[in-house]
View 1 (tube, rainbow, N blue to C red):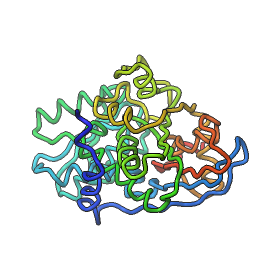
View 2 (tube, rainbow, N blue to C red; view 1 turned 30 degrees about the vertical axis):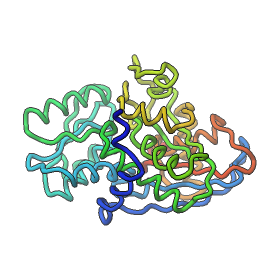
View 3 (tube, rainbow, N blue to C red; view 1 turned 30 degrees about the horizontal axis):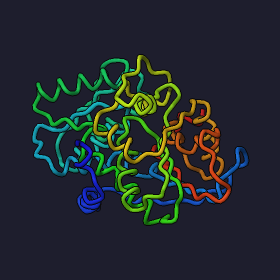
View 4 (tube, helix red, strand yellow; view 1 turned 90 degrees about the vertical axis):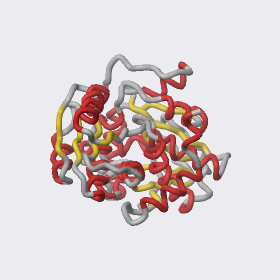
Length: 313
């Protein structure tokens, strides 16, 4: 079973490996939501304050620190994972080449260049950019770092769950956004090992229900099209590792539309001064849109996974 390579033990080892290279991000208690009904307590895990602006350096650095990569690192990304790989490459002192789909905002490309990465645009969706990154790795001798289907990457993302459990051990439910599934697979693996009764709820865009549909079908499915502006949550297909871990540890996946994410990003800015991109607001949008309705006394943690301003327009 591929998922056996990700565990509480590998996540704890990742904490030690990446210590000093990433931030321990804070948990903020938020005020009650007005409508729909709010949980008894609401907490925000602010991974938008992580170095580069998302949780992605955790997994990228955990992977990269175990590599000998004189030819540099390469990957494909909607933006955030590419930033994580660029950051990891800067720590190692090697070059990074990041392939982006054409839909990636120019602001992400500028930020990648600021971290020293070479940026190449290939295809219209992540999956096409990923094919180009794999070809580049083979041709140039660079080490390819997968954004979600790598046990070392997932174990790195799982460190979010370890921190979250330390800070809110009596949480009843954790909400996390789902793209390829690396973040929620890692979080669910460690939280279910530490507290089997905790609920882990994934949140995907209506326009990119990759893992929602895969769980429903009982197998990996490939979407025919992407219909969301949340490009960091929009692969056409996930991977066996992620589906296995999510099927084992995630209670369910709910869907939210782009407008719900946008309204929630505005609420985060108004309530807490937190600038979240659409994907960063997705987890909390499950509450604001009523896709997940907590009990009156439920203690809920929502992971704000990415910073940005696209949700504030």
